[in-house]
Picture 1 (cartoon, rainbow, N blue to C red):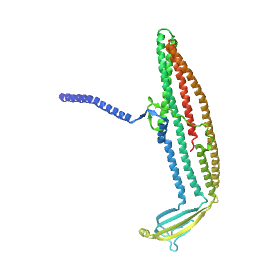
Picture 2 (tube, helix red, strand yellow; picture 1 turned 120 degrees about the vertical axis):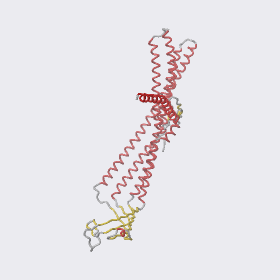
Picture 3 (cartoon, rainbow, N blue to C red; picture 1 turned 180 degrees about the horizontal axis):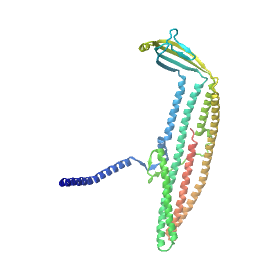
Picture 4 (tube, rainbow, N blue to C red; picture 1 turned 30 degrees about the vertical axis):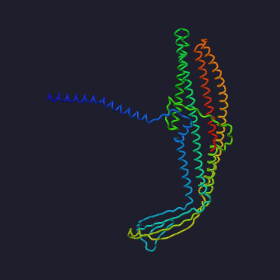
Length: 460
C-alpha cells in the first residue's frame, strides 16, 4: 500500500513539472501569435501623411453617408413617377373561387334569392368560378396628370436636395480643413517658440546659478516653457478632433503626429458678384416645394368633381349538387361591359378641410422660403463683413511683422557685437513668431471665407 501511494505521489509531481515547463512555452506561443495578429491588423490600416483640400473633397464625395442616402432618396422618388404613370394603364384582375354551400331547406322553385344587398343560394351544392375584370379610368379632370407632375417635381426636389447636401459637405470640409491647417501652422511655429524659450531657460538657469538674476525671473522662464508646451498640447488636441471628423467624412485614417497639410488654393472669386438669390440652391429647393404644394392643392380641389370609369368582365362558372370534382368543370357563363361615374356629394367636409389645410401649408412654405433667403443674404453679408475686418487685420499683421523683422535684425547685429544678450534676440524672434501666428490664422480664415462664399453662391 505504501509503495502504491508513493508511486502515485511521484506520478503527480512529474505531471505538475511537465505542465509548468509547457505552460510558459504555450504562453510565449500564444503571445507571439497575438502580437502577429496585431501586427497584421496594424499593417492593414494605412495612415495618410499628406492631405490637400481637393483630395479630401474627392474622398468625401465617394464616402459620404449623407450623399449615399440622398442618392437613394432620388431613386425612391423615381419609383413614385412609375407609380403615378401606372394610373394611365388599364387595371387587369384575375379571380378564382370555389365554394360549398349547405342549405338546410333546399328550395326547388327558384335559383337565387336576394334580400337587400344579400344573395342567398337556395341549393346545397359545390360551385367554382373563374373571372377576368378589366377597368380603366376614362376621365378624372386631370387628377392623374397632376399626380404625375407632383411625382416629377418631387424627384427634381430630391436631386436639388442632393446638391444641397453636397454644398453642405463642401462647407463642412472647408471648415474642418481650415481648422486643421491653422492648427498645423500654429503647432509648427510654437515648436520654434518652444525651442527658443527652452534656450532662454537654459541661459537663465546659468544666470541664476551665477546669481545675476532673481529666482522670480528664473521661475518666469520655467512658466513660459510650461505654457508653450500646454499650448502645443491644446493645439494638437484641437487638430486631432478635427482630423477625427475628417475621417468620418472621408473614411481615411490620418497620421496625427507627422501630417503635412497643403495650403488652400487662393480663391479667385469676386465676393460681391452674387446678387440674384433666385439662382441659389436654397431658392430653387423652396420653389420646388411650393410648386409641389400648388399641385397638391389642385388635386384636392378636383376631389369635388366626378370620375368616369369603364370596365369589362368575363366569367366562367361550374357547379354540381353532389360532386366537387364535377363543379370544377367550368364553362363560359357571362360577359359584360359598362361605364360608371362616381360623383361625391357629401363627405362630412373632409375634402374642404384638406383644401384649407393644403392652402395654409402653401402659405407657410412661402414664408419659409422668404426666411431662408433672408438668412442666406444675412449670412453672406456677415461673411463679407468678416473679410473686410480680416483685410485690416492682415495689413496690421504685415506691418507689425515688417517692424519686428527689422528689430530682430538690429538685435542680431548688437548680439554679434556683444552689445545685447542672446536672450534679447530670442525675445525679438518670439515676438516675430507670435505675430506670424496671427498673420497665418487671419490669412487662412480669409481664404476659407472666400471659398465659403463661392460655395454658397454657386449656381445649380
